[in-house]
Amino acid sequence: MNLNRIRERLVNGFKPFTIGTSDGQRYPVPHPEFLAIGKGVVVVLGRDDSVTTLDALHIVAVEDLPKSRSKRSGG
Image (cartoon, rainbow, N blue to C red; front, side, top):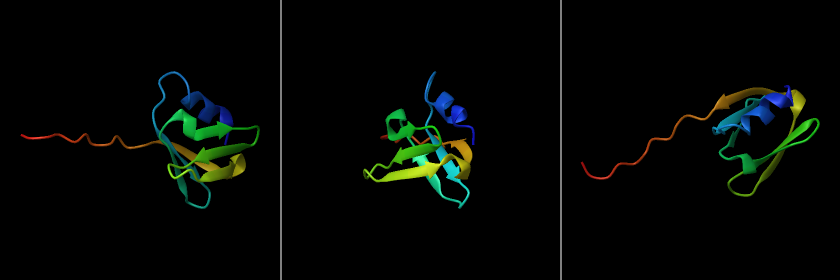
């Protein structure tokens, strides 16, 4: 994966996305602060403060997160 594609997603109107890896795992990136990009690795911070380091060679997809449904009250 060309890490520049991921870097571009962090600027100019960030939209939440997921990173997919060759083993089928998906890592959500809900905000730019949940991601760090090195020369050949990507580090994803989970909502539970877990840290996952992904080798760029194993990143196979970058996809928008589905929009969450807003909760409406009353009717």
